[in-house]
Structure formats: structure tokens, C-alpha cells
Amino acid sequence: MPTGPTSVAFTLEPAPELGTVAGQTVEVAFGNACTGTADFDTKGYWHNRNGLSELTQADIDHANGLAPYSQPSSYFDDGDEPFDGLFSNGEPVSASLGNSGELIAPSGSPKAEVSQFLVDANAGGDPREQLAQQLLAFLFNTLHRLDDPAAAIELPAGGFISAAQLVSDAIAIWESGTAAEQVEMKTLLDGFNNNDAVPFIHFNPCAVVYP
Image 1 (tube, rainbow, N blue to C red):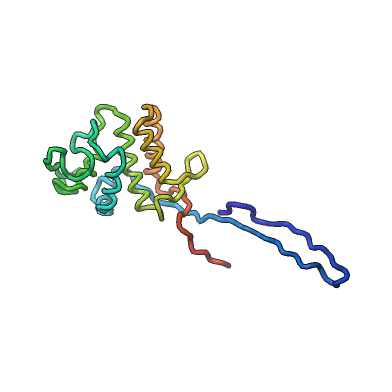
Image 2 (image 1 turned 180 degrees about the vertical axis):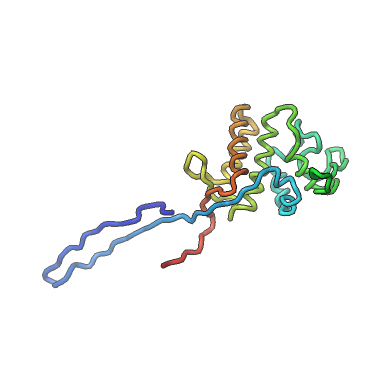
């Protein structure tokens, strides 16, 4: 995708005394960005066995360092943040089970707590929990579906934003935004998480193939 002019104009000046044209140096600078599409996944995917199998402890540690997950919240009943597999009193969280009762993650494991959180019922209607759930899924998508979390993704209305910047914006809204802003950000992240072809600009240089 070009990021600047794709052509340049210049004039050849005649030099009759030399029987040719005068030498001329023309600087031409072309810019481009390598684009791709990323298959993001829903919070339900990251809750289940397939999604959890992709997660590493480093992913969970990264999430635990962010404001929505670094301290226990008032809305998570089946566990409490950070995701370490334990309640703050040291009791293990229960095992995470699938729709048919199959074991997804064992009791007392960080993955069980992540799984429980992603599908925690929002009975109190706190928009911060819905935002935190979608943000966690979005965070895992940026870590596993982009070539770098700093890659730029295309917004629904057009234009690109760094995925890392969008995470920072979502955290700021989770911390001090209005309920309406929290719902709006939750909806935006949900849209990304449900999109299997998110347009993005690679953060790292792509291989260039010339004709």
C-alpha cells in the first residue's frame, strides 16, 4: 500500500554545446506499507480448550501487569485478578468446564481463572467487566494474530491505529471513562474480536518480491 507519491516529474534541460542533455540528479523517495489480514477470535474462543492451548504463562503475566487485571475487581465472582489460579485468600479457583462438562483447565491453574473470567456472568451490569473481558480477548489476539502488538489495525470508520495504543486507550476508559464510553469501547473491541479478517499494517518489514 503506497504511503506517499507514486510518481515524480522532472524536466530534461538541453545542453547544445555538449551535444546532449545536461546531467541532472533527481531524488525519488517512494513509501509503502505491507498490509495483511488477521483472523481474530472471540472471548469464547480464548475461554475454551483451543484458545487456552495457545496461551503461554508470559501472555498471562503480561495481562496481569495491566490495570484491569492487576488487582481484584468487584465484579468477578468465580475468581479474582490477577490470574494466578487462586483467590486472594489462597483458595484455588474451580476447574473450568466446557458445555458438556469436559475439563478445560484444572482447578487452581491460571488458565482456569482466565477461562472463568472470560465467560463470567455480568449480573450486576457493570460495563467495566464487559470491557475488561473484551479487552483481554483483544490483548490475546494482538499477541497471537499480529506480527507485533504494535502493528496498526484498521478502524471500522477508516484510518489505522496501533493495536498497542488501542489497548492503552481501552485501559484509560476502563479506569476513568463514563459508562457510555466503556460500552462504546467494549463494542469496538468486540467487533474486532468477531472479525476473521482484520486489516492491519505489519510492524516488521515484509519480504518484497519484485516482478
